[in-house]
Image 1 (cartoon, rainbow, N blue to C red):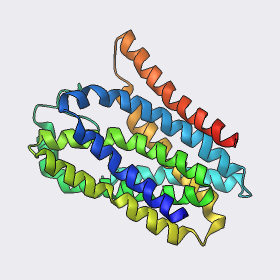
Image 2: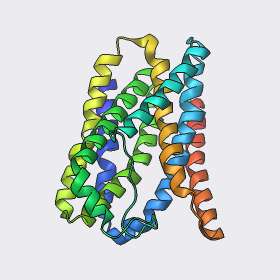
Image 3: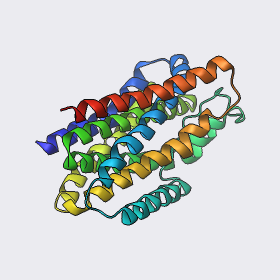
Length: 258
């Protein structure tokens, strides 16, 4: 039954964001992507700091070893992004990032395969993380899967807009993003069979998951929010960020209450 939950969660995590991106117009996507970035930053930080890390530190694993794992995880994802194998691009033409006109077309033309490979590796890692969380506790798996879906949506929306700006048809952009998303299912299945026999490693896997969420939020999402905005736009960012944190707090309280 656990494997079924993992497959369903990774399938939704890998494809739901792609379907959302494909169902909206580019104009609408361009308007909502910034709010989604704020929301997902709150969800990721809340999941890592309020749910996953406390769960790991309440285990019998040593705090010193867990902190070393957290540090190692942050460095690992930093190096992956350096190699352009764990990238999280959400920019698009006219988004205010001050790229020259046609930047997205050049990026998609020169690095299209790199982006697809990077997204696939990212999604595979997400699948392993979801599997590890479900193996610890089904409720933990649900929160982790929701956090991953939340941060996948702005990522896939950004990738989808870039591909459309580069001249891809809607169907072709959807197909490429969907194939990349299916890597999460593969990661979930591999994670289930590889991680399951090593129960003592579950707390460390939760810390690795936390390091992934913290890295994405701090190194990628929050810097996108650090631009000069009007008071109204700043308040909107804060409200979406707080909504993400509040969602995780409510879920954690609900689960602990049962």
